[in-house]
Length: 143
Image 1 (tube, rainbow, N blue to C red):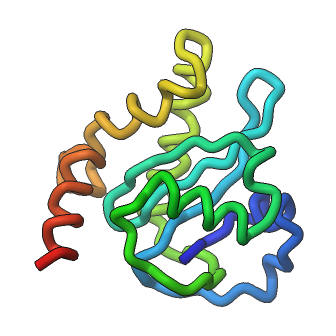
Image 2 (image 1 turned 135 degrees about the vertical axis):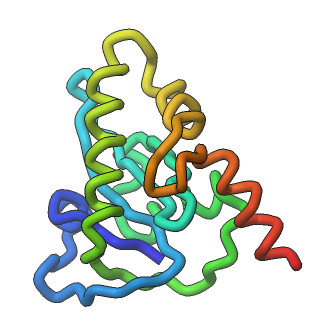
């Protein structure tokens, strides 16, 4: 369910070197600081749908998964699994999302940044938005 960056693995106290690389319907998790406050950046790898959660509410893997299930009721993944991403396109897109958040954090509060990111166009999504891809994903899961 979760692919952790090295920073997220350190924050959640997970041995990054022990994680296996996998390709599945999962969320990429990273940690970043906005205005001296830590946030957990969660990106669904198939749709690039992005959540920005306060790190205080994501101190453990279980709490992080609980938050994801709360904010993403459309996600059907049941078990908690940990891994790491080897797909350079996904890593690059998540880096692009991080850089965009760094740029936008001066003008927008953290609560608005997820909505802004989810309306952006990404080449990895064939020049579509995460919101549009999420709608297609949900329809395909419920058929």
